[in-house]
Amino acid sequence: MAPISISSLCVLTCVADVAAHRSEALQILQHEVGEPSIADLMNSIVDKTNGNFLNVAGTFNCEYRHETDEDEDAPTFLSCEGPADWAKASGDMLMVAATVAASTGVGAPIAVLLSALGTFVKVWEKDGGGLNLHTKIINSLTTLQNGLEEFHFQRKLDEAEANADYLSVRIDVIQENDALEDCSSPIANSWVRTDDKAWQVMTKLLVDENSTVCQACKEKDVGREALRRRVDIINGIQNLWSTIAMDRLAFLTRVFEKTQACSSLQTNTGVRIRRLLLDTSAEQLHNFAGARKLCEASLHVFAVADIREHLNYFWPWSIPSCETYATDAQKLLQHGEPGRRLLIDLMIGKTAPWDRKSWVILALQDQLLADRNSFELLLPLAKTFAEVAAYRAKGFPWNWQKIYPGVKAARSVLVSLVKEHAEEVAAEGVEQILRPAQNDGYNEELGRIVEALAPYGSA
Image 1 (cartoon, rainbow, N blue to C red):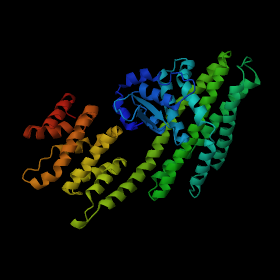
Image 2: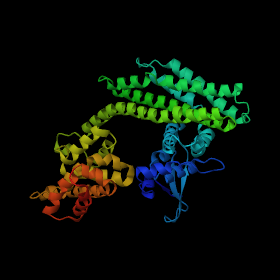
Image 3: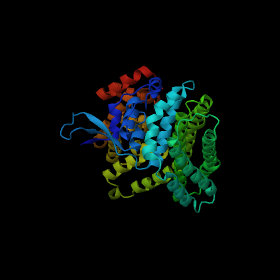
Image 4: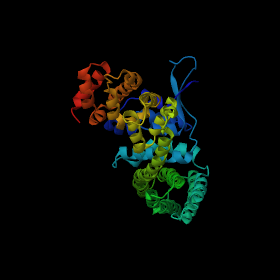
């Protein structure tokens, strides 16, 4: 069956405003499946969030497939092979769960939230848990920290591994237990102590380690390989923390199910799930992302320096090929602000010859057509695309012949950007750049762009 790239899912879903997204979030996981299926789970997430969690679907290796290879108009279905890395998937699952919790509102009964998260928990227990994930992550972290003097958390890793193994066992045991009738029994107390211990281990794991990594990434003399190891350490700590958090969610869900007769214990369990687990998870995953971006920003500088050197030339006959410029342009798009600065220089500066400028812009257009998620990467370049789109090489026909393919591509990219993000494009001052060119010599594409941006006024 012919697969449709996950990036094309954006085309198959409409864009909803924040209010609509929040009102539907409660329904994200509210569907019953006899045997929990990753495809059912991802299909529900993609459908109910209008594509807002496409990255999660990508983590689970999902793609839409036609029912028959011969008929491209045939109905499609979502096929998921499952994540190659369940440790990373735990963080994505946790973020969706935290979003659902935030959207249900603090006053909503915990039973409503757990109903929405039921399939998530089942999929984690069935496919994600019990894979010795904790041991693999900890072994990797132990190797990564060797030789990095600022990291000394082996004791915390050992404690986390022991607790994670114990928590996994307790999840299996609690499923075999009957519903609790004596609310003051030792069993009830042991369940509370089990979660207390897991919470303490997760808290200890975060003390100093995140800030230490952040500080290490700020050091000017840190080399590229050391920076990569620090990014891997951040990812490892996040994965370990997320897998324990998902095990806690599974454990507390089972506790809630077994304590229907104990209202006080159910209330306590609800507070633990919503406030001490999911609310904390949303904040902590944001902190992990911040620490990772700090290190990755330094890595971007190294990568962009390599690309700049790759495109450098002295003699006219040593100019890199057009294909080289195109390939490097798409790479630069992935390297944040440093990459965008070099792209701007290649598009409108003196770094690239006229024909190479066109290839750079065409490559960015191809990137947008191939991956709709590239909108966010290209939006900061809207003003630069406008300057190219407005270019007219009067008196220099040889230059115009070389840059014209790039001008056409820039106009096409702007049309796409305006269609999806008109307000953001207007804020970049695109209309002010294009209007003089539009008045000077009418062009249909420029006319459509200026007309679409007019309602948003001057930036």
